[in-house]
Image 1: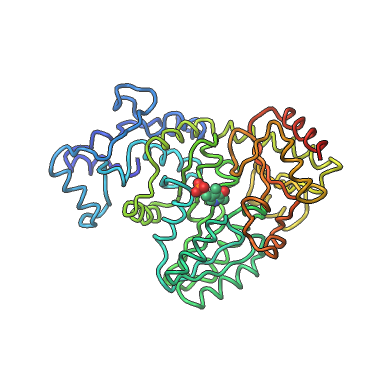
Image 2: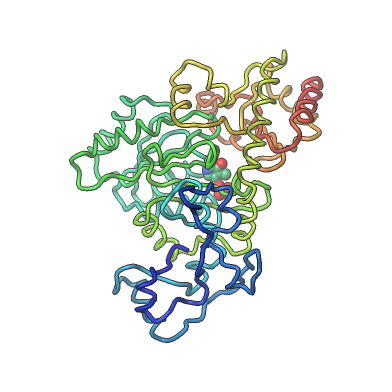
Length: 443
Ligand SMILES: *Cc1c(COP(=O)(O)O)cnc(C)c1O
């Protein structure tokens, strides 16, 4: 758990609150460092504290009982900064709870982050991140395009509070990134560099290493360096680990692959202790934490994360390899194909990614009528937005999620009427191919 005092501190404070685990599942056996898929079953939870229950109970409570008055005072001294070290223990459910703390410990493991926070949605995670970092007059530098609601948040909502933004295209080179970064640095305080890779809905990859090198060069003599945050929803945590490439904070919509069953909405942020504590204060203030029931469901999801994502990734590879040879298909925008290509995107892919994910773009020959006939004929794949679930989903961005995007911008992003977005699930790959075969025939 994140706020657990070390043993000496606990002794001095007269005891550890009853909810804190005494004994975590070990992270190593001898020299062997245990893998995330192993740690997801037990890490951060002590059955002895919950009547021996193998699985954590769901703690439905709004508040936690202090062992004594001194412990209560000690907590508030930590919260208010009268004592260094921050808050400790569990006090009130807007701040934290046992289910969320176990979830946060396990989330951090996937990317070897120092700490993590859980949120009520991906967007509440992103909004809390921005609110904790920006003030009027600041500039946010970001890659583009971003998830539509994130673009709205930066441009329209933060814009109302005097926050400016500058962006560079997702596939930008070091020189292009440098130009935008220098311009931003020259115009006032840069609060945050915000990336999304692969970008939604183009699947364009951001060169995180180049962004980090650019940031370090442009802000070399500056008093403070803006942190780099990145939305890793599409490929993380299995196929893309941005902290290894120079990012500071990783952002998740846990609604997608991490939750993985299309049955919950949640978000997460991972990073170092200092940054996470800054964001935690904002979350404590505005209450964007995930609820205990959702945290419990996410713990169940994380136990099968690697199984689900591996299978979905293998399925997508088989399906896309089959689709690209079909006469009614114009093009398949699947990241996995980059492994054997020669292009700047392929170079970024090979340096940053260990797999192509399972969400891709299918461009059919024809226009909206052909795309709609294909979508309406699908028997296994369901017609729905979102991605990363156990079931295969298909949607029509131009007519659905991106309907309100101006035509010129749609064209620039490749959101054409013949585009179908597909997220492959964990079904049998040959059954999926049979479904796509009969749907193509129905065009
Ligand atoms: C879905 C999504 C979000 C928003 O997450 P919610 O859980 O729906 O709030 C943010 N970024 C990306 C890339 C997404 O796919």
